[in-house]
Length: 453
Ligand code: ASP
Ligand code: MG
Image (cartoon, rainbow, N blue to C red; front, top):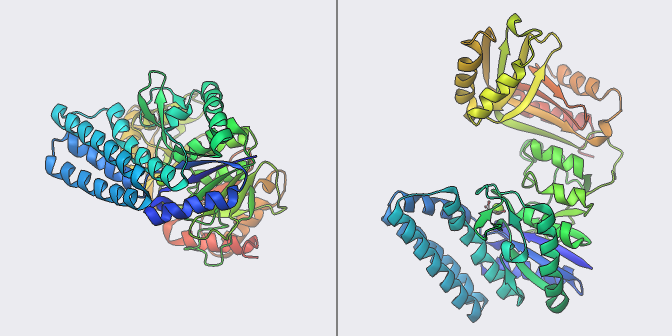
């Protein structure tokens, strides 16, 4: 019997908070084995990224200040948590000092050296958690996670990783019952430090879950779990007690503050339930994410993405011309523009895309150069200040009338819909409205589907 528990940065904010996490491990772990996966202390990863840039820019004043702040905060936590931690923390901070001195001297920052710098956040945090739990503390790489060398966003080599995680962690748990492991960081096959992308500690937890097949994976953060809507938009929003993996993944796409986008995959594949809970409200059982649907509601949640822009490429020149969509996506991908939603009518005379408002200028420039000026499309129109609204729920699949209810309710409220998309998975329906109607659209649908009850 095993549990994997991941603790996010705010739960690791200082020595007291780390002690609370350790108490939760003991309280819920009991006689079971527990792997505690830790994030860096809140804000540390951002500070380390700033530090790496300051070093590369040769800005000694800034790097000196940031190093001093990191040292003060971690050494103070270590003093509170015990003598052994202090020695280890100081030694690690000295290594960080040396690395920063090296980067400053070279005046250059690669994705690989940036990963080396940010890895210190979790490496420091795991020592603190190891001290609080009185257990072994390992880096993700020492535990067995091996990745490709896409530094900054590395992908685990799955079979090898799962095999090695079992080889390392099972014997350790058999003797000590508790093991602390860094989230987020791993290593390449050549032993070079890599990271799994921002928020990657969730991914570490589900990888370890996939390897050890625990009863559940608990993601402890500062939110109670997934909600029927953003409570800032809908005050009557409720916590979802349980939800399926497919729904949770779909909600993640729409920006529900949940998890690292790839994190749910290993858990879903290996059918390990994931529970989201808050260390700030530990009595709340949180949201359980499982394989099987536990609700007969068609719609589970209403979400919105604000500050979106609607881009429409049109012209009869596009009709019946294979490769037009490919050119659009290619033009945007080359400029690093992320597409949030796509819609095309069967007439093929227009394709509408939604991008984040912050990427609108780049999207417009790319499409203008690659499609309009090459004559592939006739016209490019953009509408900034839009909101994407999405209703999510696996019960929609094969249930007639959900779209009619969604758009009926929206129409009754006098809200104009600018574009619509529904994937054939039928897990969600998304549509675009003007920003000023965004909140009202979410509120309308939340009550239309009775999500406040
Ligand atoms: N510390 C890393 C970050 O802030 C990883 C994590 O917290 O999951 O992105
Ligand atoms: Mg984090």
